[in-house]
Image (cartoon, rainbow, N blue to C red):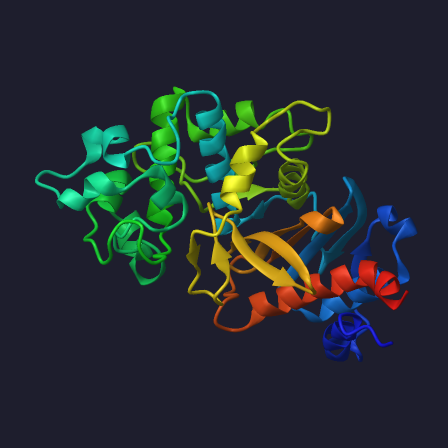
Length: 346
């Protein structure tokens, strides 16, 4: 019987059928299944693509760079960094520095709440910020430039007008995750970058190369964070492993990961579910939890297969409306099929 999932390979292959372009192939691909090599060869046709790294059950089995890029080079992971921020919130909860997802944001940022605010500001919780359900007007998209031009990004985010009720529909806003960064700085007694270094330090290979700050020195929660793709993979592997680092040290509770992967709203970007910074969908017949950054910076986790995949792309090119993000989803589906085709044929 023909494997319907494996047919997806032809989608990428058809694009690249006539291409024979240079690419970097890691020695770690010595034992890569032939189908996966074929998929990664064909991915050269995706012009913005820079790297693809595939880990199976904790071991990197393919590490491919395109157009001169490698997975060791720092990359701006854009909004994929939102899952790092929400994980830090989970660690703060585990440590008792925060009460939990239902804690009031106005109480935690009392000095930055505008004078005579809309009373609904007292209803916004940490959970609402992490799931993009604060109800405040977005500071992303067309409003992003105006927001980061303000003299105080935290106060500006809190001063946005309400366009929905807290806990209502998804309003994607980097201002929401920046508020989380400010909260982490307040309760953690150190910068968000330092907290990430300390709390995620047990994750072997995790490193941050650069991170933008606001005028008050607070690191931008959920954007403009640079790290090597291998670092993002190491973070993803820790999450896939239930919050435990490679040496067995617990980094974040498994319960927090379960909460993060619980659908709380529906994304307007393709209709996928959305949890605490994570998009939730099904690809090639498997549940997939993924982080997505502008331009096509992707961290995919396929729990049932023990599969973690990182893809990085040109951070200056769009990936949503032009269909590129969907082609990356197709590429992941082809990667999944490369591992599952033989099983489905049996």
